[in-house]
Image (cartoon, rainbow, N blue to C red; front, side, top):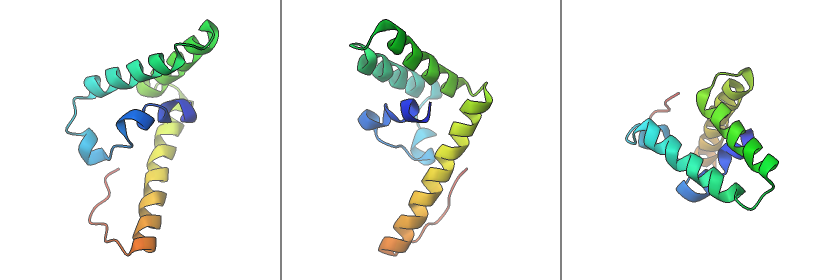
Length: 97
C-alpha cells in the first residue's frame, strides 16, 4: 500500500500539505486514481484490481494499515524536511500535521 500510494506522486509530485489544502480533495483523489489505473493498465487484471483496491483503501483510511501508511507518510515528510534543513541550513517555519 505504501508503494502504491507513492505512484501518483511520480506524476503530480510529492505535494506539501499547504499545496494539498488548495486543491479540492475529491479532485486530487480522482487524479491519483486515474494515474493508478493508467499505470496498471497493462498488468494482469488481478494485479490491476489489487493496485486500484489498495489505493482506494489508502484513500478511505478505514483500515489500520491505511491509517498507518498515512502516518508513516507524514513521518517521512518530517524526516526529509529535517534532513534538508540540516544539509542546506534551511529554516523551517511551520510543519503542519
